[in-house]
Image (cartoon, rainbow, N blue to C red):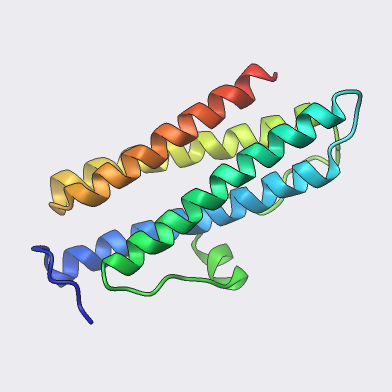
Length: 157
């Protein structure tokens, strides 16, 4: 059933398209963070193992919230790895074959910063161009969460 929330179908479709891209980015970043959690090595193994787990737990919550936001707008979410890889702005794997925590941190930090920039652009577009202040506010919270996760990664360098 279509959502009757005071936005045109065209504007809702544009919002959903961008939220789906963000969902794909979150899924890829979560997978990369789990990879870091599973494979990090070094004398800081245990602390970084727990740190990466904390981050992917936060990302999993963002993923669930994003999927529910898309559904609340009356659309279905992408849900396959193939769809996510087609939609994401991120690269699936890092450029280094190094299991030290700092290598993972650098790669994950770049992805968080990329998502922050994408969120900032979406916030303005959703509110100012499409009149969807609810989605703009929703993405603002996601951006703030990523800013904090990026800060914590940056502090580890």
